[in-house]
Amino acid sequence: MSRTAKGLLIVALVAVVGMAFRVSWNALRDVATATGADATAATLYPFVVDGLMALALVATLVLTGDARRFALRVLAGYTLASLVLNYVHGLVPELHGRAVDWSRLADWAPANWALVLLATSLPVGSIYFGSDLVAKVLHHRPTPVIDRDEIPQDTVNRLGSDLHESAPETPAVAAELPAPESADPLPVNEPVESAPTLSVAAVESAPRRATGRVPESARAPRPTRTPEQLLDEARSVTAEWADAELTAEGIRKAVRTSSANGRMLRDTLKAERAQEPDEVAA
Image 1 (cartoon, rainbow, N blue to C red):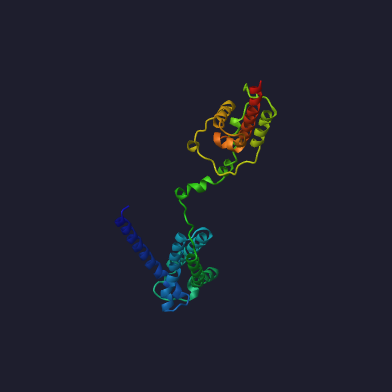
Image 2 (image 1 turned 90 degrees about the horizontal axis):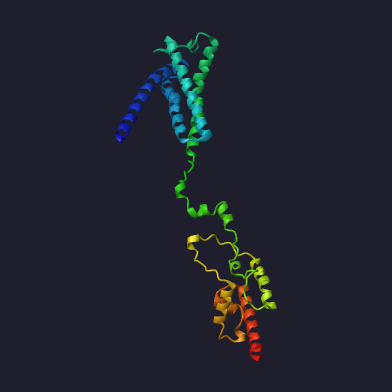
């Protein structure tokens, strides 16, 4: 609907409501006069009843929850009261154009007392309910609406199972350990036999601190070397090293392997160098 059509619709609505108020105003003024109100009070009486109806209608559009239900009850109650008084005005011809005694609102005494009580209590109710509705509207704080598309993605990744998925990972040293059934012709001596024990201890060491999972696409490929390849590379790198330079840390850095493999290679190289004089002497 265009803006012009909306404007015309609002103007038509205001005109209809204004004419309806004028019709109801005539009936409510005569009822107020019949209950003892003076000319000024009778003129203002319709604004007390129908005016609170308009205020309650606006409050229902603003408030939410229990406050909105309260505004709907006030709107329904005053609408029903205005309807009853307009109905009485139509049933009693003496109310049209001149004041009558209050006992003439109805021929039956209990009905007359109920109508007088209703007509005289509406102004007091307007003061109470109107003040309450205005206070509720002024203190109302609308609930902010959060767009799901604006939620940062890093917050979502930190929730729930994502935290559990960042568990410590087993070091990749196991892939480079010597196989138990390998046919590697390594020298059989005590240092070499203790290598698997050292490797297992390295695997069972304290886990690394969890820093989050790294995507597979961001991980650099790491070639897996066999024990023979590690030993050959260590021999070529340490060929010109002195015996004092054969340390596990130095070998580990030179061939870029784990600490356990560095100790194993150190022991193996020292054992080979220790056998070389014996072979020369033989």
